[in-house]
Length: 295
Image (cartoon, rainbow, N blue to C red; front, side):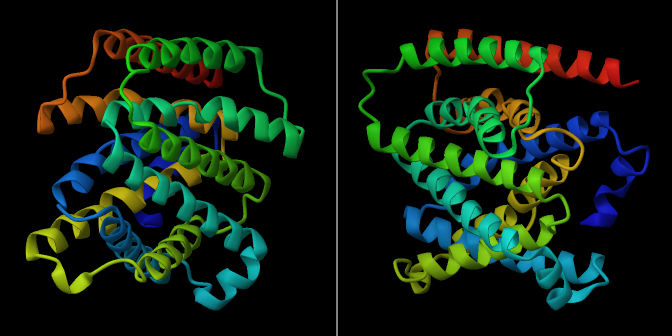
């Protein structure tokens, strides 16, 4: 994993690097709903397979790319590693069950509230100041979210929406924690989170009933796209603030409904299209000027 990301990181340890890594992470994570829907199993089973394959892939990458070994990585990361793993369990569980109980657009629109939540947590827990530019961008994005939600308030998918809110709280707390403790191994965090997730969901899952197709689909997600996207988002916190990482990851909010339309014929409402456009334009304008000022 480190070898894969090295070309992105060797140029210079800058804010630009952080935004590039976060954008790539957002792209990979936006395709999670495709795998989750095509898996054809319950939320418990999907979460179990996601956690199992994530734990396997991240453990292998950690072994190959970190010469310290598992024991030293765990000792040096300390208690924040455990908390990051637990928060990842909450975030991943909320995501999986939200997608199972509401539309893809609803889930990712709610997840796009992460910047505002991260900024609040960073201020409360880290006393970290948020720039005026970031505040303006967050406000603009929240307006876009409001437009999207206004078009789906009567959908009745309250359980899925509530789970998405739970997911965004866990995700924002995790970004804030990793910002506070940048030396915590990002690979170990995802590996531990996957192991904890699989261990908990095993009590409710039924692995003996899975088809070969289910195993293959979830392996593609759990071994590559999902963990890699999350590691990239965690790595980005080394270079930019938790709020800025969350702001950039809102690219998922626009891309995920696009995949929903292309793969499952889920047609977003007009309000979703208008609000999503505002979010997308804000992300790119904000990222462009931030990178320009970083040169």
